[in-house]
Length: 264
Image: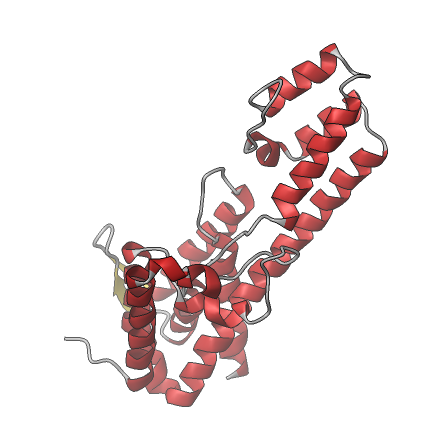
């Protein structure tokens, strides 16, 4: 039976208590208050870099995060002691949030610039270029009026280029409001800190065998770090429509985990 170390046990209790509170008091939107929002959004506040890691989206989300904390964190706390392990957990979790936010903000700056550039020089040609450059963003929008998709909008624009120009400017301004100003870009969960723990475990105990849950096969810690790190990079770059996982936060946790291990 796994014996929990003091800090790991405390972190587990805190996360579980907050999750239960989220479920029992849904009317207070505790998860929304603790969540980390996109930099530049009206919902963003600096305290969220700390609080987001203690809220979770559902039972499966918290289950896998807490299993990772319990099975990997104990060995690290035994090596470092309670204070260092707690510092590692908090700094890595916050670092993952900062990493995710900065990367997201850089991408948002380019989008914001393109949207505003179009409003200065609107034309059918520029509208098509704008949509093609940010295809996934525009495909996610639902429109009222002359069409239900961005391609219906383009078709209408092609039929009446001069008459529809002012309407296209309004649509682009609305898109900026949706994509940037009032887009929450919400992130919650301890995954960034847990991925940092995984990185540290792989660096300190590279040849220790870990048993995967799905599929239930053994794998050395160093290979698991490489596989999950590669997946975080690939999925973060893909940004598939409908994917709600903050893969770049996972990658940020691993980056900060590596830095912290070297520092320790």
